[in-house]
Image (tube, helix red, strand yellow):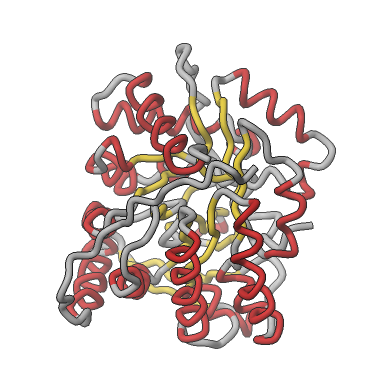
Amino acid sequence: MFGLRLELASRDESSANRASLDLVDGERDELERRRIDRGLARIAPLDHQPRLADAQPDRSRPRVAHDVEPERALVEGDQAIDVVGAEGEMVDSHEGPELSESSGASFVDAHCHLDEPVFSTDREAVIASARARGVRGFVIGGYTPETFGAARSLRSSSVRVGVGVHPWAVEEHDDVTLDRWFAELPGLLAGADALGEVGLDRLRARRFGRDLDRQSNRMRAALAIGREVGRPIVLHVVHAHPEAQVLVRHAGALPALVVHGFVGPTELARGWLALGAHLSFGPVALRSDRTLEAARCVPLDRLLIESDSPHGSALPEHQGPGVVVAIAAAIAERRRDLLPTIAEATRTNAERIFFAG
């Protein structure tokens, strides 16, 4: 075994703000399992079984602050890697599989950011390229109410949109701004298809020198709004799954819940499945064996695929929604299913959650 010390830093932060993680080859999964077990052991027993409400869809409803480049880290030999996905898993950014052919199947990209300025000059071409690969639907995740207008302008029969207050935005803005945004969310959700992104991001809190209390309070408020309004809830969770699961367990009956960009071992996936959540797998599944193995255990009616475009990968060929075809193919191969089976299941799930209204 050998140790690797990874300095996790964004392209624009100083060395004083860097957060370090010690990872030992071969022990990461075991350490992760122990961390999850410790977190779940602290959860007080509930006097009820967590469940998801049967939300009745409302059929009457008719520059984003994400980093443009993925966060980066350096390992031995100065090889660039990306820190992406639900657990910040390190993913090699230099090589990758070719995008798979769709074999006539059709897909829905359950989480992307087509509203971002990076697509302002070629958005139509990006969408056309994805459609040529069989991607028929797109779900745009929300960052803050201030960015919702750009997303809402793209809403159509094949494009659905979310509005939320991303945990990064929680760290970036003062309480006065956050209070105003949370007050606006219920009204804005009348013209949206999902609440989110909301959630917890320990790496982002650590960057600001904080614990998770600030984000936890806002996630608790977001879950209450989602429960009241009845919109699907899209979670962004990074290095805080036990804490996020506690909040969900105590939030009462919730609408459909989606953990976007899931990365992690099978045990972590099963924890979310026990809470009734859907798991959405992005480009990390093309590189992470343990994440791909987790996808194998997800029931077909809880499985989603996403590009998180343009943030899901540093590889140019993987930065458009069309990458969901390759993700579906990788999952199908691991599960020993046919590609059309995965395509149909993930498309049906996305349509049921986001396109019912």
